[in-house]
Length: 241
Image 1 (spheres, one colour):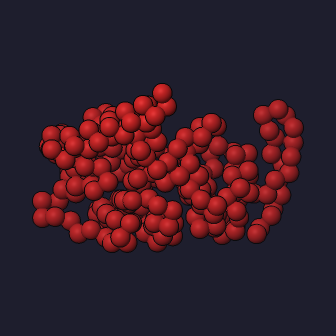
Image 2: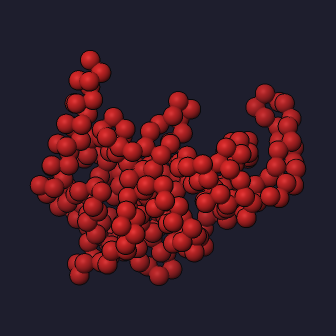
């Protein structure tokens, strides 16, 4: 591993020498996390399969394609008690994996989800759904990250391919990529009622995105999902008492 040492001043003004993070370095998650916590905030890095990736600065095209999908996930959260969406959050995924996905959607642990929130406010374990906005990071998102997410238990994976104007949809449990239906509306499996209108997503048509989502939220599948989450939550409360 490259170990070009530099001086980093900590919050209590104590100076310590730590290795820099460089793309291609091999680290354990424990070592990566220790260094990354003391790396300047403007630097974004991830550990994928034990390999460090330091991200390039994000350009306008990334940001403008991030917002529409984030809006759909947040609107779904607002109508689905027990579900939480997030943006650019470090995930302690495994002993050799600490990604920082662009977006995630998870079932909260008290509702039966497979991730948990640690006392220091980090997310540990796989969110049920992860989404990445792929421009300069396309090769990593479609290969190294996809493999890592599948290996650690993420159920569904979305990749917004900016240049190609396409949304790739993967069922990681079965290691399959879903084809798009003729109407261009993706209906997520892990989150019933989460309908994503792909043409509207890339056309930045917010009204159509929300209208399509509302149709998904009005389905019996979504109602059953909400009921199921509530039953899990209620059962866990009873066991505590």
